[in-house]
Image (cartoon, rainbow, N blue to C red; front, side, top):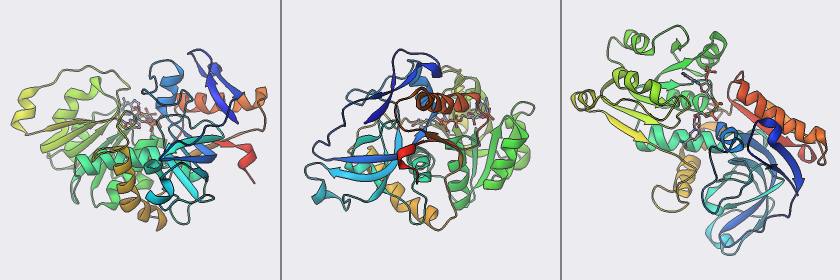
Length: 345
Ligand SMILES: NC(=O)c1ccc[n+]([C@@H]2O[C@H](COP(=O)([O-])OP(=O)(O)OC[C@H]3O[C@@H](n4cnc5c(N)ncnc54)[C@H](OP(=O)(O)O)[C@@H]3O)[C@@H](O)[C@H]2O)c1
């Protein structure tokens, strides 16, 4: 099969396509023929050598795919409803930029009814991230205010839609009017251009001085102080990214006086099993998020499908490099997908 490899850490030019042996499903694993793979910001960091795969994970990039079930490992037939030939999408610890991948059965999910198989690759990472943090951990409730930093990102576009469906009021930050308009179309009602506005002032003004009940943050250190300021009493800060840096100053006085909670989470390094494991998160996503996708009230936002031509030619490698360069450039709203050309009708 073809897989995308990083010969040595660097920019998009470090990405290469090579023929490698097919993976074999072990006990409890599922082999998928991959149709499309989501490109995540974490992949850019891994390519640069700043985000190594967790122990035991594939060294091939790629945290999510869609495709069809090619084979079931030992014991899977008894433990799930998955069958060979089924359309599926999967959350991965790695290995998704390849024509075939193995995943623990608990991380392989059906494709929501009516959804295009390519677009299904845009869902696992963002749905699992947002559902497990904003809803399972921070318990966002109807009528509460959620502030989403980077509202037009892959994660942000899912957070805005799920929070609206849950009856929350959604505030977002983004760096341009175009991105803010996209967030408004998805259901955000408080729009903050962080390049010229202060999100603490804007969210307070829009909420009668109360602030946000939950903040979903991807910026990190530089936003820590203002994130605590913008939270209402009883507020929860959910930290899932650190694009601006991992260190900041924590005002414990604010935390205690407003009874704030700081919740950090990462998906990739979690165990598969157990109450907080990835299989439990995927099961909860299928139960709560997939019906909203099937009825069309929540949708994957796909900015770009990058087709990877057949073979391991320079053109095929260039396509993968372009997908990374596009995500890095940051003009996208939602997700960028790689689509293996053999899979496109
Ligand atoms: N913890 C987890 O399990 C987990 C899982 C998935 C993703 N993540 C993290 O979530 C983040 C988003 O991932 P993604 O793949 O969805 O990335 P993405 O689509 O590339 O989006 C990155 C976003 O960050 C925004 N941003 C950058 N600086 C900002 C600032 N100062 N204020 C507000 N927004 C800012 C950008 O918006 P502008 O262009 O408007 O600046 C852009 O929309 C990443 O940090 C990623 O590592 C964490």
